[in-house]
Image (cartoon, rainbow, N blue to C red; front, side, top):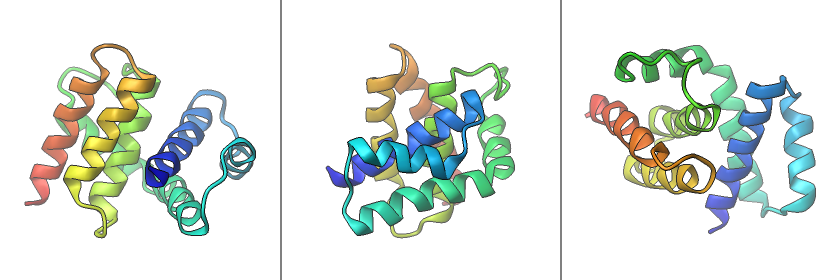
Length: 133
């Protein structure tokens, strides 16, 4: 469960950066005031944020390859940032199995997105994961 909490915090930071151009580190530290993380989960969560932002162009291009007729800007911000987060995990973190990253993204999208978010996120991430094989 703590990894999920770490992912949710990372998602919320990415969402804030996307919506209001928040400073990532300040947003991260602010969110940690209400939800404490163990040291290794803290590091994991920040790695997701930092890595995602550093590789945003590559990640967004990868998402857009499979999001037919959807520009990255047209997607719900929730969906966009959940897919960015999970795509980073799939593409750059070998210690996380793709199926786990995808499942976690679906669960987070069900919590924060709309009724179609889970299916949309799953379809795109499954294709990104399949491309690696």
